[in-house]
Image 1 (cartoon, helix red, strand yellow):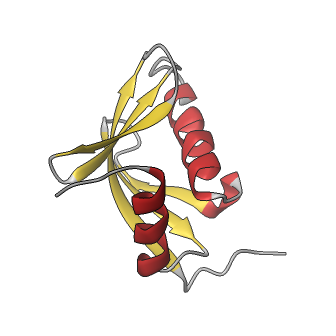
Image 2 (tube, helix red, strand yellow):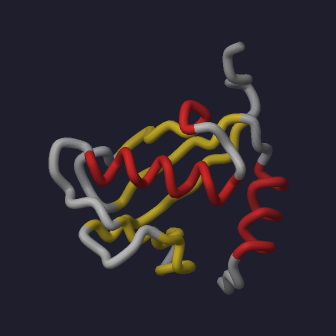
Image 3 (cartoon, one colour):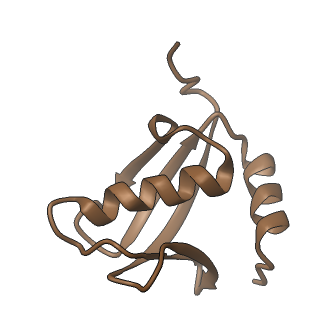
Length: 99
């Protein structure tokens, strides 16, 4: 079964590859900061970033798409199957995010 592409939550993230473990650590400026254990080589950090976000949001890997920034630290991500309100609620329940 395919994903519902008309329902999504767009998220801006900043990735820190080569960390001691993969985790979401909170906000940095206007982006969610995600530490990734994998090095930024041959897409490994991007793959692990998708896995980390999928676990945090309770989604399948295929429901997460890197829309822009696949070669840099700042990325725009689409999480399919989540509306903005639901995505923000999940973020708030998992992490104390302050603007």
